[in-house]
Length: 376
Image (tube, rainbow, N blue to C red; front, side, top):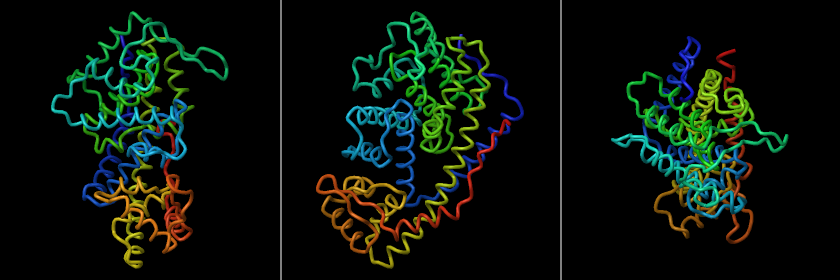
């Protein structure tokens, strides 16, 4: 038996309708391809990788996550963090690749394969294999066990039920709810020795992507959950009740997820609007200073507070050689838009005051994101 989906009430249905409206508006803003859309997607994907791993204690600044995503050397992230980020990047890349698979069948092999991609750097965690013993989730700060997973002998059967539920096309649940329940059941089954939270979040993104909810990069909740980790843990703890009890009410979890989608969707919509205004302003300055058009990617990254390196600039601009990238970056220093820092392989560039002022002006004019609880 798995956790079952509660019958949705009027408030939950209204929240789903509001989320779908946000998705339509976001899709409309991205419908006409613009040069800055790809960079926006890369940053959204990096935030997802960053958010999910930060929950597990693997934190790196966004520009380091972008560097790792581009197979470049990060500036600050330690080796274990790099490996964890690369693993999640690989799993997310695979999820996005198979989102439109004509045979969208879920299977135990798919779950185990995703887990292997994430955790293969740590063979002691048994990547791609079910756990072989009981499992306990501890609160190390308080030195107490806060959750005990089901008996190890139940894991194969429970995973079979989860896969069967995911493949049941007769279910009338909204995709947002199906994805949330997949997340809840996987994390409560806790089928792996390690990486269960990352796997549950990745599975939720896969279900959303396969159900066609707009651009899957902007549909994931990893960033929100990374920024609201304690609330995330609190609701899972409340619903879980300390041990495997699938007869408990999943409604608090469903409401938490819907609230998260609303808030994250509003943030993404605001980002798209601001990215458009920023790009237009940077185009004007670029023309004024006779800068190469490709340098707009570097300017956008720096204006958003990222450290720009030769490698990450090249990754954002197709068919750009290392020498050409270096010349562009020096030119941006000469016109006082970039400030260089570091030496040789460790050199990077930050936004100079003129460039920062453009972004700050856009931020000052923004409307606040609505964070009201739709279920209050």
